[in-house]
Length: 141
Image 1 (cartoon, rainbow, N blue to C red):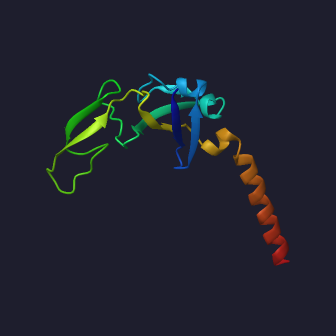
Image 2: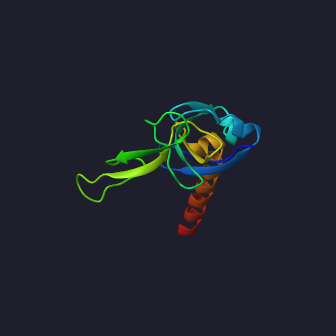
Image 3: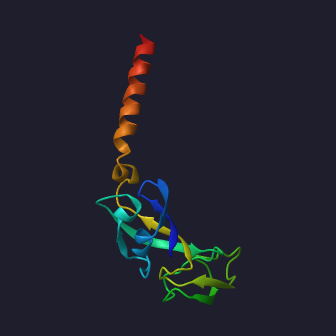
């Protein structure tokens, strides 16, 4: 049975991590980087998640230009999976394909707008900030 950690980020750089298994995890199997998945799989109703990457249990990243979900050795000049230390440096790196498979452990996804609003946390934050402002005003008087 598939089990994933889904890391969801938004436009502002805020991220949340969710553990999914069973039926919800099966929604991700066979999907590729760039595909959209219903957010209900991680508890974010009414929002689509765009898959942006991921990694397997050994930490090998998924690369968009590699088809399937198998391991592949590539000679890289930079990008996902390798950062050269000087100009012209290349290195052979083992990466995983763009398709989510049973070997995938972590999946990175992106949501349009704010993840806090999608989860309904924005209202609670607004109420807390208004209460803090009211307390500050009371202290000044």
